[in-house]
Length: 239
Image (cartoon, rainbow, N blue to C red; front, side, top):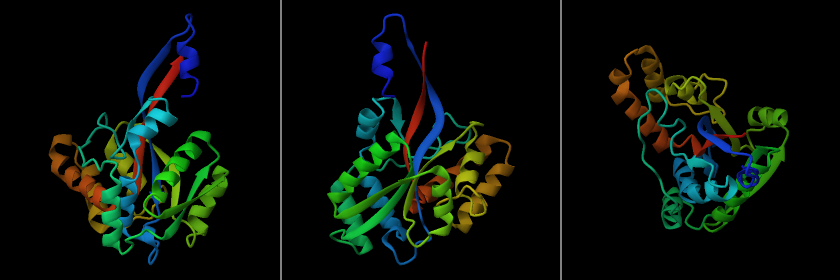
């Protein structure tokens, strides 16, 4: 995205833009029992601290769109979800309800060595500080990140990842990301009802028939917040 202005400034070049299939997100360690990140109210509060539109405008130069679901409206079986807006006062209320009225705790966020991801982690760090949460940022090679998400659960709170809906079918994308038996479930979320809905949804060929089922599933995901959707990408090609 940082090359867009340069391309657009060249009279002999043009920028081709199309909506991408990737959702960039933060995985939460939902199995961190006894730690703040294991509490869904803390996870909800974190989202209230993130101004996703500002993030897209500053880090991505406006070339993206804020995400509130892990799949975009272009996906098969998509259902709209509640948008939890940037609201620091609401974040403080949720933290107080979770037992952390002044914040007063720290969280670790791990990410691959990627400049864009580092920038948005730093924005999150600054915003979370406003509600009393210290965010410790650690970058590492992708292989190390994958290993530590599994082997260092005592220190794993959050990690930056993306999910690519290559098929354009949210029934498979959501299963891969969040089913309790999926190897790609780096939130380690386990919800028996959600698992049941995912399996039932995959078995229904008529998408319209599964509408209510997926509305319930996406509602569960928004309530439990196993991950934090941040933005959908745009594919940019200079020609």
